[in-house]
Length: 152
Image 1 (cartoon, rainbow, N blue to C red):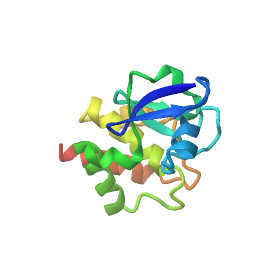
Image 2 (cartoon, helix red, strand yellow; image 1 turned 45 degrees about the vertical axis):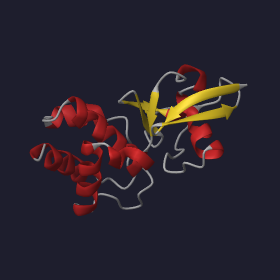
Image 3 (tube, helix red, strand yellow; image 1 turned 30 degrees about the horizontal axis):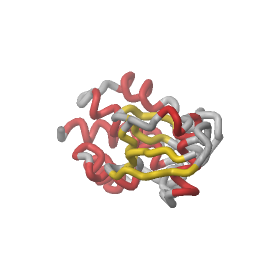
Image 4 (cartoon, rainbow, N blue to C red; image 1 turned 90 degrees about the vertical axis):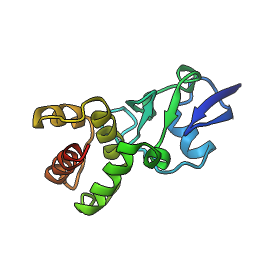
């Protein structure tokens, strides 16, 4: 079936079953490999993208449900002013170790700061709780979110 999706500001025509998870369309059909497969159950956050500005798990999102939405992936987050700041601070603060979860972390942090430009530790913990980092860089993630908030 042919479906149209708005991904990173461009309309793409996808030939896939309507129940196909967005993650597989991004990675396999559009070659956007920045969005990672982690758990496949929406629990780890590695597959986080923005759907109309909301951090959403792409592994659990059927493409049929996002035909009229604006989907943003890590490949285009630097076009968002806050996303650009988050990426800069992430590098400046050496947040990633293995890096596997970082695209999802950046997407969740950008969504948080877009909605709440001055989050408390509690706000950060709540917004980021669905993103798992096996390397344990949570203190640097929190510090980086506060650093961006201090410059918004």
